Length: 261
Image 1 (cartoon, rainbow, N blue to C red):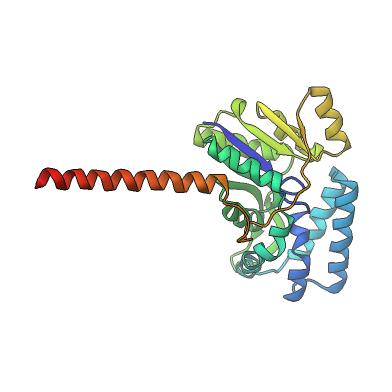
Image 2: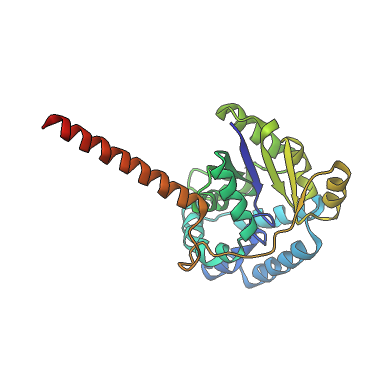
């Protein structure tokens, strides 16, 4: 079995997913106006300067400190309700088309992100992919965030998660694909036989050139919820398969009826 692994932030969507929900958390009274402004600033830094270990560590600590005491059920509700409003306008059309191509080719598709599972998993469901590998914040017995992390899905830890998933699902990583924008995901890209750099930062662009990895540019946006959007290839294929199955069933029933007369 082959698979395709997509980093989330700046690969499938144009911003850091956790920061994108800052205004929503503010409206729910979960963060202060000062924290919201810091979130907006962090988005600008992330967008124009990219990710490096120091920035990611600072962002991680800042986000974890903000989440301490949050109710997990409320967070899930906010994210579920905000997917179309907040995340859909950030989706790259090129990423969605690639996901559909991999699905049509019979490959499993996964989102792989350092963002919390509470964000990545609902988005994976929304996109119709097979699953999500994401960070796991620590939740206490009362269902509240502690401000700590059980598992941080970052760098080499992404590789560990991918290898564990591959073993459980008989996935051949040598025949699989991976897509990312950041040099911090070089271990992830090295793990598969078909690595792709997407809108790469300077370090990843340099490494990709040295290793002859293909580079892709994602820039167009797409709204999956837009009724005017053309039917997606995967859904068309699914509908066609269903139609064939229905026709075959109907034909079999008709034949059975003729023989019984």
